[in-house]
Length: 409
Image (tube, rainbow, N blue to C red; front, side, top):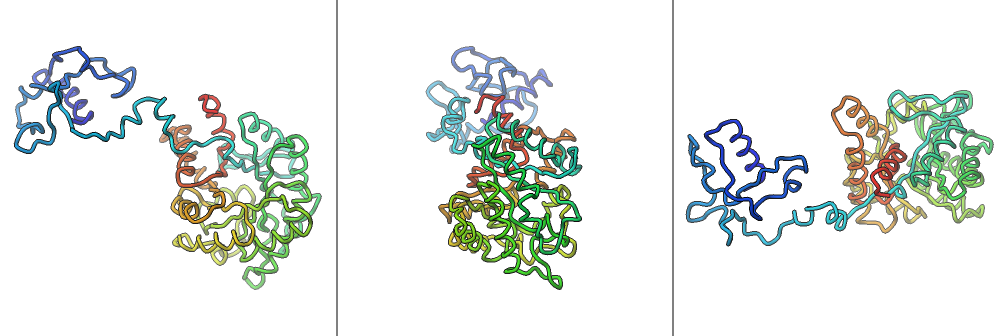
């Protein structure tokens, strides 16, 4: 008999004295309360023989122990028994055993913490991303230090660029005195063991709001890559440990790899946005950077959400061109793509828990519909279970703090 049946029978007994049963024993048949509900649950023992519990029923009650082919039988102690040797619940019966056999464990070392930065004198909250804000450079440094305390060591920077600096060619992207370049230097100076990642794409710097150079409504692939190579090298010169091309131009990983290597930056890693989909989940991020497309959409270069196999084409190309890690973006709606890449590549796989996913959780939790801590930690574990080695998440600091408070790390 399932535990739910026992519980229902108990509740029914409480409601109707005629259905009540009296436990006949307090021997080893007593069920440990912590395995049924919780330590605060009823301590009334359960007679595991369940003999006579339906004797006073005023309606027919199916007896799973009766008949020539009963669903259940009795064991040597006359207790109801499902004769099943394999019982997966044995590996879940206590926290110690669950911890011992856990297949996937998320740690703060798996996180990349995205930080929004701007040139203003004060931080600015992002309405569509509660808890996130555009940081001043000094505030950014404080935020890095706070996350550092909880074991987060890797950060990726996204700039809100003043409109007057935006151009179609995105030349501000490789200004050595630009905000990203100064931010890299500040972090590396104060936290030299940190890993600083940079976004390689033109959309924050483009007056067209697109990831590449625009001509007659089209994104120019090779011209864009020329600009991206300049951007990546300038970021490496500023001290970036990892460059992350998010533009989805064909051939950009190989070109950036060659550009970095030709300038002596053979140790600078490439985290390729391999399967970046033309998703509706990016809205809050574009609010944060004020980088919504000036016209149309990004479907001519970002992947179609309907396609899964196509990600394997992109993964094979990025790996052959010298990528060190492969990313899937968004994350939760594309766990199947994460798994496909994991099964078909020996490179580390990253998942981006994007702004829309973050905003959805925040909205539900603000309304009391979800337990924020529980659902966030579950979500991050799902990324790991799907095959992600690295997780970009706006919850990086908070999740790491929760883990520290729970004594996990």
